[in-house]
Structure formats: C-alpha cells, structure tokens
Length: 190
Length: 314
View 1: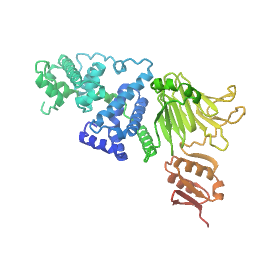
View 2 (view 1 turned 30 degrees about the vertical axis):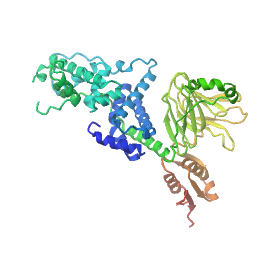
View 3 (view 1 turned 90 degrees about the vertical axis):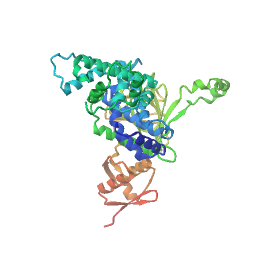
C-alpha cells in the first residue's frame, strides 16, 4: 500500500464516486493487508480485525457518492478503520477509556548486555522500543514510517493538528535515538 | 550509510527551521527502524477469510446496483401511535429533535440476499425481501430486532439476550446460530425457527406462556393458537441453497424470489422430487446444476426475464 501513488488513490476516488465496481475491488485488493493489520493493532483479535475490514468496505460503498475528491482516500480508509476498530474495542471492554494506551504494550524483557546486535536482534530491540512509545505517539510514528502517510493525512486520521503529528514523530525519533545511543552508539555515529 | 532514505518532507522542513531543537540527527533511527514495523507482529490475514469478505462485499455491491440501492439504510423516527401523535403534535414540534435521537436502522435486502454485521458483532443474512429493524440503543442496553421475512442469525455471545420479534413470535437467545422465517404474506403465515447451534427460546406472542426451548437440530412453528412443540429441524439452507427431497417447483420458486427472475417449467417437472446442495451464486449456475443433477435429463434456455427449463424427449 505504501508503494501506491497518491495519484492512483485520487483516480480511485473519482471512479468510486461514479460507482465503479472495478475500482472498488482494486482498492480492496491493494489495501486490505495494511488496513487489516492496522485494525489488528487496536483489536489484537483477528476475527475482530476481519469484521472491521468488512464493515469499513461496506460503508465505503454506501458513502461512495459522498467521497470528497479533495480528501485523501487513503486517509479516509485509515480513519474509518481506526474509528470502527476503536468502537469495537470500546464495545468489547465495557469502559470507554482511551483504549489505545492500554493496548499492545507488553513489557520487554531486558536484553543481556553481551547480546549480539545483529540485524535481527536490532530489529527486535527497535520493535520493543517502538512499543514503549505512548499509544498515540506510536500510532503516528507507525502511520508515518510504515504506511507512508503524510503528516496532513495522519492529522486527518487521528484528528490532530499537523503540528502535533510532527511533534509526535520528532519525539518518537528522538526517543529511539536515545535508546540506540545507549545500546549501540556506533550505529548513530556520523 | 550510503542510501539514506530521506525523512518525510514535513520533518525535513521542520528540522530546517529548528536546528537547535532537534537533538542530533534523526535520520539513523528513521532508517534503522525500517524493518521493525510493529504491525508485522499481526498474524497474516487468512486468504480464505479475505476471499469471504470480498465475496460479501461483491454481493452487497450487486444488491445495491442502480437505479436505487437495494440495501437502504433508512434512518427513521420510530412509529408513534396515531392517537399519541395527535395529542402531542404541538409538543412534537418542539421536542422533535429529541425523538430523532433514538431512530431505528432498517436493513433491507430487496432481491438476492444480504449479509450484515450488527453493532453487537452478530451476523445476519437476510433473504430476499426481508427487513430487519433495530434501534440505536441496540447493543448497549438491549439487543432487540424486528424481523419481517426470513433471516439466518449468528448471534455474538453476550450477557444481554438477543431478542427477535416477528409478527406473532418472540425468539430469545444468548449466542447461537439459527434461522427464522416469518413471512406474514405467506399463504399460511407462521414463524418457523430452526436452530443450527446453541439453545433458542421461542414464545408465541398471543400466549406468552406458550414457550419452548429448542436445541441444535430442532425447529418449531408458531402458527395460529397451537401449543409449541419441537420438530426436527427442516431448515432448507437458503444461504447455501440446500434442498432435500423437495419438488423442483419449490426450488424454482426460491430461485425466482431470490434473483427476481421467472422460471418456466411444465407441471411434471415442477412436482419431481430432487436433492441439491450447492454454493452456486448466480441464478444461471443454480439452474445449470439442477439440470445436470436431475434424473429427468433437463435442458434450459434463457428467456427475456429468466429461464425456461424443459425435458429432452428421447
């Protein structure tokens, strides 16, 4: 999904407005993996993630004539997944507390100092550090780094000011940098 | 550090404006984080499930084809008794806004079938012309739906009972899958409940004491003034198109109803008993399968608004 050009999404957006079923199928086929994973990030439950995916695409077809051609279709899809998934999570747990911050954080076991920093270990380590980020910061970082969304799109999806998105990403990178510095300074060295 | 992927343009711009605030180069963490996507931790989507979702979407799209969507989400104020409405009309003008806060959602499958996920996570398959209505409070304080027509339910487990009201019966469950057929226009109107899994409680509306608990594989009919008794489940599984030892005419009627077409066949063909179980999705596929599997050596041809099924004379 990251590799799909914005121009392609704009074309799909226009075609969807004209009830083009082929465009609808193409959008599903090219985005389902990323959207399913994003839904899973909230639900941590595969069945729930499938349901979110189906609901979002059902809804997309229902509102197809009202899709704003000026707005990023990609951002719209992510936002729909986000809202549907969060609703699902709120439903699942009775209390409607900020579900994000309760999720996905499992304390990482401390690495032994003599552990080898080969690529895989480094990635595992980075994944842990990313998990340590506060919920919304982690989400903004994920959308920026791995989903190729612009700050404006992320702001749209998460209902934030673009400036806040920027802050989240800078702070996330600074945090990762400080962790890297502590563990493996030569990777950071210029 | 040769092929450094650039930072997002917005970030580059920001860094250019705030050299004093960025504590060090943010490129290395950005670059190194490439393979550490936390979303890779998600179990890979099951291709079969994705295919099923695609099929459900395709179905919904076909059902909503022009000129008007077959599935309409109608937001409407709950019907108010005429007397009350007349008495309160002045009040209504001022508090009308409040009333719209508890609107009902209506799911309707005009032709063909439609599968929908209810807000509580229950899944429902509506057969042709079936209508399902529920209030916005559905899933929060109650799980109550009104059904006209036929639908198959897979009720999500929850503490709140799931209640289906038909014109003459009330069906109560906690989490199970079962079929309800309640077509008031049928020649002999009745509500038929067939249970696939779990336990379902059925009550006749005119006699609330007249209740029955059904287990998997059982069915019951709520007709006029009869005590409810369990029957073996005779669910003709319309979702998968399964008919056991039924006249071909019954199958043709079902295809006609589901796809909104007309099937012409002579009387000897219509009364011929036959079994079929298929996942065929289109009317033509169904007709082909019936023709091929019947011992009558049937052929078919397309007509202006459906098909004609006939017997090949030896």
